[in-house]
Image 1 (cartoon, helix red, strand yellow):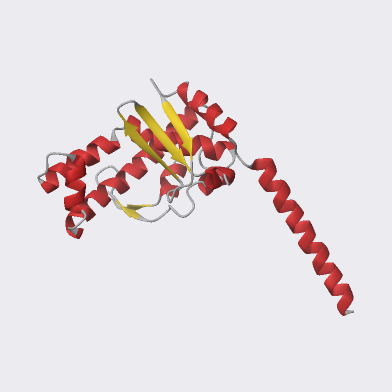
Image 2: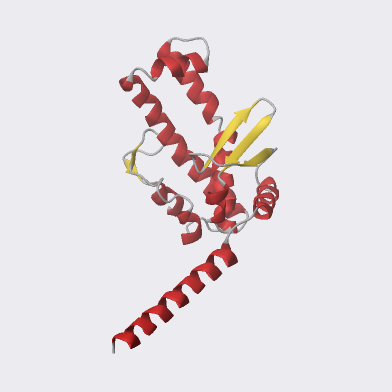
Length: 197
């Protein structure tokens, strides 16, 4: 009897492993999906220009608004966990930070709060002051929701629904409740903003 249970469990384990391997390989996004997403978003986002770098990073994906153009850095392991629609959303969300000039606004606010002439000097000074740093964190939380809204609108204009499990899986671990004003008074989660009708 014990041997039968062992064989049954072994069969179930092999079946589940096979399904997991099939599912991940059948749905995992690739560099081609990134390139396709950029072309698609270029149809709805004016003057979109984005360079992408796949490299190991502590952050799953982030954008740098450089003088020579925006650079999206994405962890390849994160990319492998996404579907093509998830990639489209991540790229739209990150590019929205550039389009909405979030890094410039955050740098200006940091210079104002710290009384420093450059964003780098301001951020260095603010890191030593938790109360002032919280003001920047609140501003950044608002920017996350604003980027989600912009990405959701851009996807909708392409006929892609953002409120799907594939897209929402792309924000897993980053869906904290956020106290945000003035654009989102009260407490919102990123999921609420993305799925709002």
